[in-house]
Length: 393
Image 1 (cartoon, helix red, strand yellow):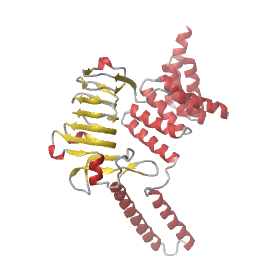
Image 2 (cartoon, rainbow, N blue to C red):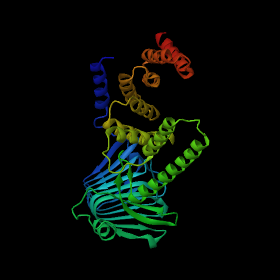
Image 3 (cartoon, rainbow, N blue to C red):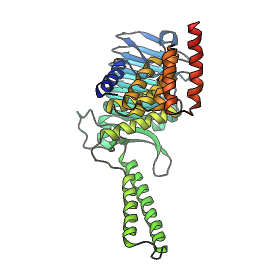
């Protein structure tokens, strides 16, 4: 495939995502004032991302059993959001930014609660175990409380963080992030802990405490590995030459160094993209296809020439019944690697779902050319051929 054709297919794939959220379909409630609003499933589109924006003096309550993909809250003043126990947020993500005097009351688990550039926020969980992680930046006064354990209630935010854990934090600093979790520290009992977020070379978020523990573990493994190697080498009794011994020791040192975290090194695009690809794989394995697509999209935004990421996102779209998007991504993958069997197969599946049976047969045929023993491709080709024959009658 020519470079021009490849670039054209990649541009087509990227353009297809412009204005679209991989998480789902955005549903906005904008500019309401002094209203009590119940969010019902009937009001929402398929796979809804709920976006509350620019409202004042309102109460928003999720009706029983409402399911949304994600919740975005921007520019609210004097509002309260209530999420009952029967509701569900499939990605377990809520983002709140540029808000003032807002209460967020939840009876469900929130995996990630992101708070930015806001003031006078109140967040209440029914149970402390429902707090996954709360990430904040530029928040002036945050009251965090737990109905089942009031002893853990805390007032945090920029001023409190500066007074307790980060005295160098400037009042106008809106970019430094802090994470609050209910975690065990040094093998002890769980406690509510707020720490500054650090970034490793692959953009992986961690804390100084976690990095130190990780490095201690790596150092212990490194030491044990060298002790074992030393024992093996001494037992060889001359079977290895000095040059061979040095080579082996060099390889052991190299392997250990590669495993160590590299805080402070320049983050490469490749490492950041790979980290997000791995996040996507983890979400896909547990059936969270929408969130997996989000991570694969982040990887693609960083680096567009990783064929496997396009192919993986195509599979997410197929799982989410978006055959048109899957076709575009499969084509993008093939543009990068014309012999990627899975991409041709997934292209065939997408075309079949779009009822383009002749093209589906061609795609399955190409997959079989590359992998003649692929039973799944054989069965899919027979099915597509039958559909094509019925069309011709």
